[in-house]
Length: 307
Image 1 (cartoon, one colour):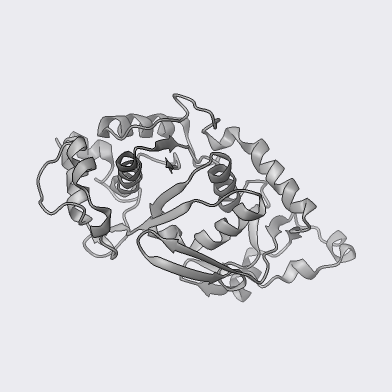
Image 2: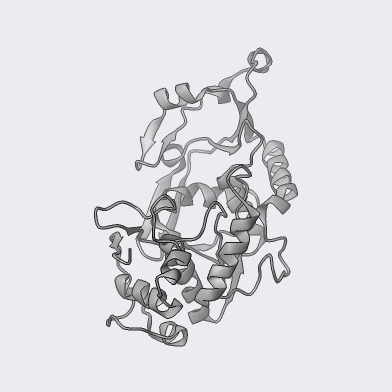
């Protein structure tokens, strides 16, 4: 097994981030596999090196160690996305050669007006710019984004928590952006290339990314990679149902540590709240590896009160 934790260094890690990191670490350690730490910093405006350093310090304090990463290297490096742009450019060339890449000149207003909502997360593009002739494209003055054209195909996969899915690409995502108009590589492209090129066999992440899975599977297959096994886990929410985020105060690992909580307190609480262990008490990390039962993981959002 090769798993990964792939945080974005846009702030100090909080309880919601640690929930995913803990479960990814736990899944790999229970299987005796290899855990990769990958820094997803393609959002150059919001990502900061100070947060990359801080998140590695916080993960070390929690005892969530990794086997490959930006600080220790490994056979599949580099492990920082800003150092992997050549891989993404090569993937775009592959898509272009296959006749799947095309420029999109649509404004944000048009996309919001005509896009069909899917699962409350995003809109499905109507394919407007796919049919433009070369002459029409030459008349455009707006700098385009670049989309990949998806076929009429159903992607089937079985999630480790939520079971089987059968997703029609034209309905669940439509033609999606792989490079933005500001030249930033899109998340869908970067994560698919990285998981494929790093030979990741198991991806564990938040349920909010479940709706992206079908398009990533198709993109990985199109680029010649073998898709991993996916496990999506329920999100942590506060007592009124709001998803935990960096905007909320008092939930960063540093703030919890300053309040006197230990790493074992935090991880044991998360394991109990998620249903992985039956008793609410302090467990050592070795105990958590031995006793946590993924089959008992809750599927509904998990309310936390460690605030």
